[in-house]
Amino acid sequence: INMKRIEDVDTNFKIASKLNKPDIKFYDTEVEPFKIYGLIKEGGKFRRMPEQVAKSVSQGVEYLHTNAAGGRVRFKTNSSYVAISAKLYNVGKMPHFPLSGSAGFDIYVKNAYKGTFTPPYQLEDEFEGVVELADSKMKEITINFPLYSGVEKLCIGLSDKAKVEPAELYKTEKPMVFYGSSITQGGCASRPGNSYQGIVSRWFDTDFINLGFSGSARAEDKMIDYIKKLD
Image (cartoon, rainbow, N blue to C red; front, side, top):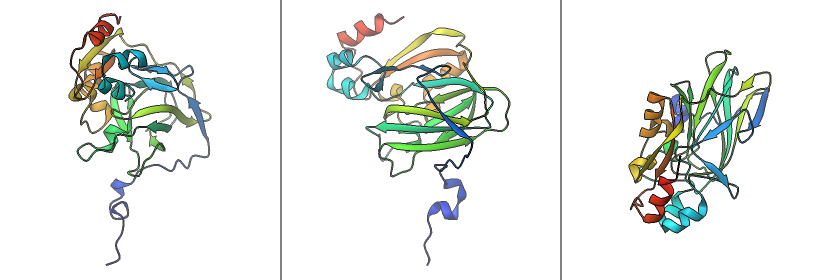
């Protein structure tokens, strides 16, 4: 038998990692009009809380606080496609967790899911992906960050003729804060937007912060002190 790869047999298994977009222009998500929610940037890495606070809580929280669970970038564009170029670290590869959830990104137009930027299985740190959108009308985009991987850099690729504008603010700007263990962090959701906080956020149009830490939600005094000071 002349064996083939599964993606040669079933095209639904293909990963769109080759951009092949001659008109593509990349944007830094840390620069306006893009706005990142649920994360801070410190020491060249996205984090869910300050590093020194995480260190003061426990080794588990220190290790997990750079997992980008709950991170989002929002903007408006009329590009007919959205691409990403991502640099990750501490990539979460687990036998019981789809890579699309632990290390992938997904994209919503308003509250409608449009696709997943699924990394290749051999992912080490960097990957690219593209999701085709139905039209060239102006639309509000939310891209959710990976649940169990660190993100060092995320750039967005759009048609170079496309408009890019700030997204509308959340109806409730002050974030809901979720604290808990693995289920709260997002394990083992098939993709980031399927974490329960993402679902609740879309229901109520509200910002949120994910302080879920796998096996490390022990309500330490340092953690409680940090949470109660959040606005």
